[in-house]
Image 1 (tube, rainbow, N blue to C red):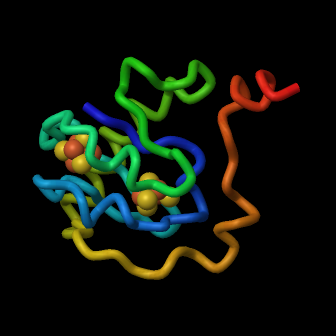
Image 2: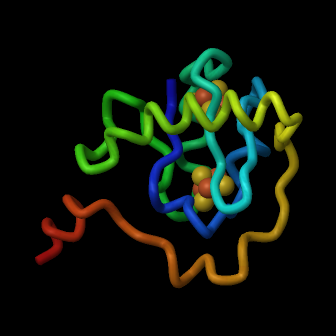
Image 3: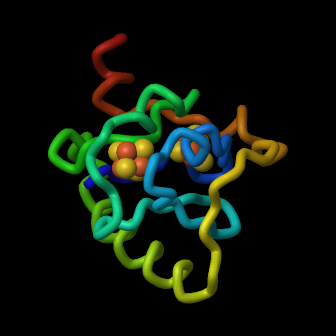
Length: 110
Ligand code: SF4
Ligand code: F3S
């Protein structure tokens, strides 16, 4: 399955939810999670996210490997609460401040 990683935290641009054909995004206060049992690996959400927060689980930058487990855990919790999200909403107010590339990318730029 695909996995939402750190750049989404405190951003929540939510463009991803509009393109997902199976509506498998679940929303928490400052983050979205993909339900691993529902994701069909279509890749549509990857280019939709303006901060490159979404990865195939086998392509996750190493420092974000734990997000696979977090997506599974959080998506289950939020699903139980009925927090499925399928329509875009405004990003969080401090989104720009929190957008963060993976460390590996930052290093490559040096
Ligand atoms: Fe949805 Fe496809 Fe992204 Fe999986 S890869 S979350 S099915 S848009
Ligand atoms: Fe998060 Fe990107 Fe979606 S910031 S809400 S994964 S479009």
